[in-house]
Image 1 (spheres, protein in one colour):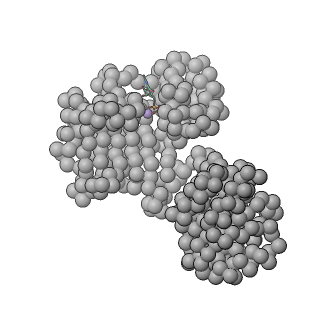
Image 2 (tube, rainbow, N blue to C red):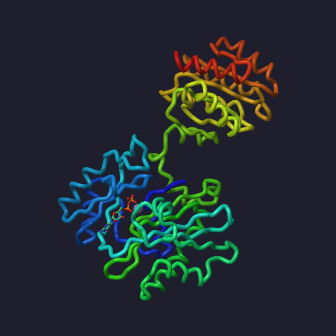
Image 3 (cartoon, rainbow, N blue to C red):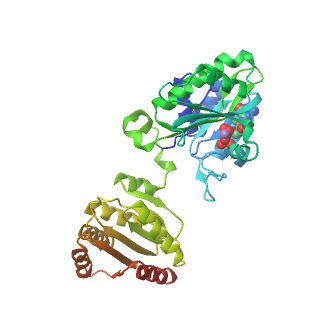
Length: 387
Ligand code: GDP
Ligand code: MN
């Protein structure tokens, strides 16, 4: 799960990580009153969306007086921000962060993330902050300092020193920096984060350390024990069909093609998407109903897929194991009847109770094409895509 910068900064505050003063605004009036409380200019106005790259795309602006705050707030609220991380459709801005502007001496990069190879948490830091860290990693990897933390022993003093020296931290800031790193590490572990990134972490011209950007991702599998983090979930930032699918524990990801496909098992879903592509069409989604889906889940999965306006045809590819073919067929028929199915559907299924499943489909009176095998299914899908 992803959260907003202003939410990440709320967590930073709790963990005593230095951040600029400020607050989040949902309308122009509250943007102005937050700016008034800051008592000084410039003030930074920052679009709050679940995507980075805002600076280059016009989502981070500086205001030198109150009328500029007003104008920028008006412009940003309601605008669609397209950055190199949003995709071409961009993201609608409906919250902005209003912060004290700071004068920057150095922009550093700092992050914590799990390293699967060593099964440790790795802290990465670089003097080359502010810009695209991927580019630094590709062209000048020696400019990134990495320390690997053993989760059992936690972060060690020598590792803090490695980071501080690697960043050429002024000696007057080393104590402050070290305690900040300890606190960030604690935040990361306590909240089951999967990524914590500050880009840039700055040193101000007054020699203060400040986190002026903040990005945190959380491990979805740990959210059951992170109730307070779950409160931060922003459904406006998620695809509505994906939100709907998550209510029924369906693994659904919307894509740009026009062939909806419903499959049990992630591997089979990937293979089915390949077949659709080989047949010259594009998948509209990834949908794994899971091994043990019940009729209700199948019905909801089918309904969600049908509500995607891009979908022009559907391929159902099921290998019945724990999910029995008759359960699948019942769910499909129920959903089709409820929504008044008009799209062509090709069903390919094999496995447990396949005969009972086929019978349910045949007797449903619905216009469902059954396919005998994958090749046959692919040909029928190809035909559907052309129609
Ligand atoms: P991102 O582009 O989405 O990663 O947004 P950031 O929060 O990193 O902001 C982009 C850039 O804006 C930063 O790298 C800074 O150079 C600049 N910036 C952000 N806040 C301030 C500030 O308070 N003062 C100044 N001078 N620059 C800022
Ligand atoms: Mn940034």
